[in-house]
Length: 182
Image (cartoon, rainbow, N blue to C red; front, side, top):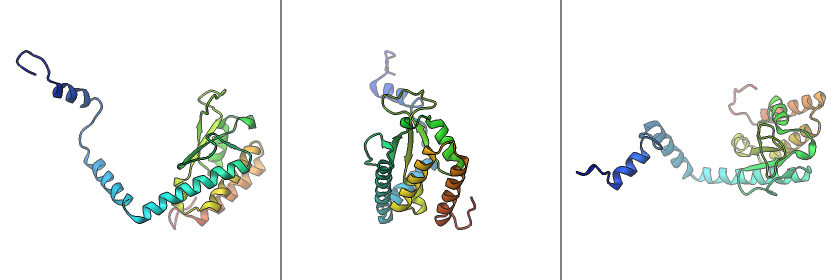
């Protein structure tokens, strides 16, 4: 504050930024970012990121083959949203049923969605987690086929049980840890 009781511009900016929208220097966050940046500079990371994109594109293409519309027509990144409105069921039920068979997705609104936000017409999913496990394109297409099978058989407990067994079998080939049990 100057002699007349007015704030100079630097003080105004400082007061606007801290503590309201910016916290203190969190050492653990700085360390985590340093490790992330170090990992991102390694050749393996570039290969991993490319595989994430290849897998996502394989998934989007397989959804199209399964007659399930990818909202954007495909994907240029690790994510996609599919439109499940033609199947007459909200995404909350599909998300819940996929959870039960070991496939994890998020419900998501789609453009011009007629359904409410808590039970919209879209399912959002991505490829990083399964790529981390070691999935390649064929396994990603297999996951899409399992999702499509569940969507089209949402009320069939026998089919859902088969999907759960197939999911377990697939995940067993690509364990998170060697001794991990699911």
